[in-house]
Image (tube, rainbow, N blue to C red; front, side, top):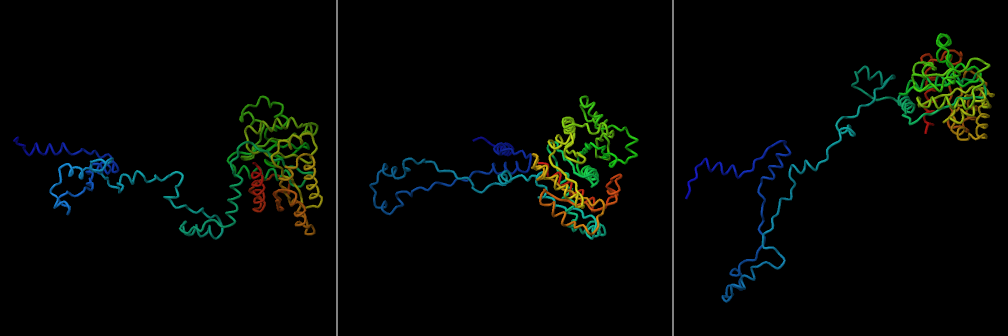
Length: 407
């Protein structure tokens, strides 16, 4: 018999054991489970014939009969079936558990932080405690945040809003500037305002101030039309525009002999050019709805702002404007119009403001009132910094209503 040394015995035993290379905890657990021997459960068999009571006295049993009794039934294998452990292993549990999504579900791991309150008791408490006590924004701040969200909504395409009236001096241009500056403040893309007033409109003067406008190159919508075929980039277009912060403007023609010559086809060419670079455009239409460019403006408008005043005549003209639009093929624009009533002249208490608002509210999508404000009533430069909080809030509501209408 060969002699086996201890060293040779250990080498043989090591050769029989599988080598497990642990690259990770899960792989090591899987390898450990695989290395465990499979438990075999013996198949149930009949007891020998000698152990049965009737077989004890029957000594005549032949080997063939014993073999026949011990043989398994037909169709069954003679081998004992092997049964694996039904309990899942640690590796199986890890493999089957879903991987949490850290990108789309960050709230599973980090508690959501309340927005920081600004102003009021909640804001003061937040500052005094260094942020330890955060009650969240109050109802007023939540309303302001909701307006900002509506104004800044991302748009697919280019949209145009026409601001018009049948009467001058009731806040049409000041509304265009105030709403345009508000859009520029809250939107990620700069808006554009076009002065299409045939009566020497002053849109740019109200946005920049007359002194600054005179010092700059006084390019107007007429200059833009003369060279519109050569403009193929935003840089080239900027030569014909003015800028009040992030609000970009196209000045109206100041020469009375030329200002009324803008046709519907010319306006549509300008609108197509602006639409290639701006997602939001405002068009100051001037007074009336029958001048040359008006059919092109209404044809390309996505919604309307009808300017009105608290005077009885102003309310009647606003209602007449909506009726004219509905009866001349612009019923959808009239139905979705936004009526803006500006208290420009600070009417006396004799005027029933509620009655005028009720007179107009039932024939438009939304009615918004702009309170009396010297920053608007003086007819000079309009800047958001000098306006009352109530006036700025009204312009935010108008801007949000305009963007809501872009569908």
